Length: 144
Length: 144
Length: 144
Length: 144
Image (cartoon, rainbow over all chains, first blue to last red; front, side, top):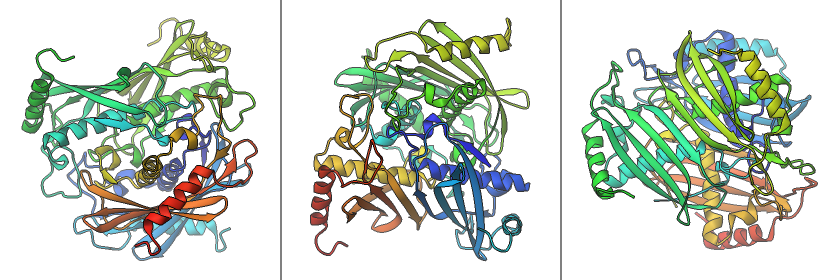
């Protein structure tokens, strides 16, 4: 998928303000779920419709980002995701941001499934399992 | 109350990125409630503790801001609130940001009380009523 | 243009956090300039390339937003812009957000041209003038 | 230093939206510089005063965060910094967020000094060197 850098993403140094990259990572993950056919309301809490609260929450337990090259307003970035299941109850998504085939930044989000009432660890939701499966097939046996 | 402008509040033009001011307005309102002795969990939703969901929500129905003078990193701003009840179910908060006695920006948040289940209009929560009352007394009959 | 509401746009009340709408307004304006063929680096400061600092800055002097209906994660919004020149040195952009033909929110950004060195008022940049002209033609004599 | 969690920091899951923690980390670093007596305008770019552009920029080259316990609105957090020089041209700041003596989250920012014109690596600014020195003395030989 593509992303254009906007004025509000940058700071007074003229490059993206570092934590905006992590917002982009999360939005790229959401876009990937949507492309796979998942409805955001099945995965993310939204207490405007409290009749069916989600049983499983997917909090982020770790995130990181590396900045290789300055990213500035107007840049057209190619965004590549590499989701990976870590164990029965957690997964991570690596995200690469490329400009003209150069990786200018990378990000990583690590999520763990918990029961949203008890907040104890549990298995990943079935929908996420299917999306992880499909993503790894798309990447092939030897993802680069 | 006081607020220091941080690097992440500013944009590539060297002044605050405009919508950060509205974040500051909301945080100033929260600080005012806290100073009055109200617990954030009585006023704001937080579905981590779903046993007692709030009956009344206070969505913002209108906001605005005016920018008179450039605000830059390191500026020490004085923040002044003028809360005002509009009718039985709504109120607004005007916020002034001053630097060395000059009003550099103003903001306004208008809230309406709704039942959080039915989303129909309702009366303001008692706690907000008391805070509005106390705030107008503090400002006196002729608020400056 | 279209916009999908993401998880990070929403708050604990399950609807968009109000000031995110103003970020969307600015990004919609940037997208409109881009669609018209303008390069972001001609309009917005980016001090990573300090050889040719922009002569004219376009600070926002006023912004506002109205929230008619709750906007939640996953919503697909249609974004409509109505730019309007106010005088020789200022213009505003009204932005409507529609969901299934219902206007769920509106925003407004008002910009004034200033000389970026002296910070005195000046005429709008030529490129913005042309974009305003083209936008008003697109809207026709009786914009709805 | 202290930090109170505000409504806009939290998301629809009722806990802080993950990348806000990295904003807090940066603001804690800025506060630490200020407490040490440094003026933000000597360290951070602000092109509103273009007469003396900063010679050295300090871009973030890596950041990360770990989330141990849910952080919710109204939480009063104690923020502890551990700055550390990595080599002649780079340093990192570890930040711990504690609630009632429990570390609920940690963050890390890694900065590299570059010449702001050529964007080549250079030595840290003297003021940052002094602040790093003073910070390590404060932590003592066996920082906890």
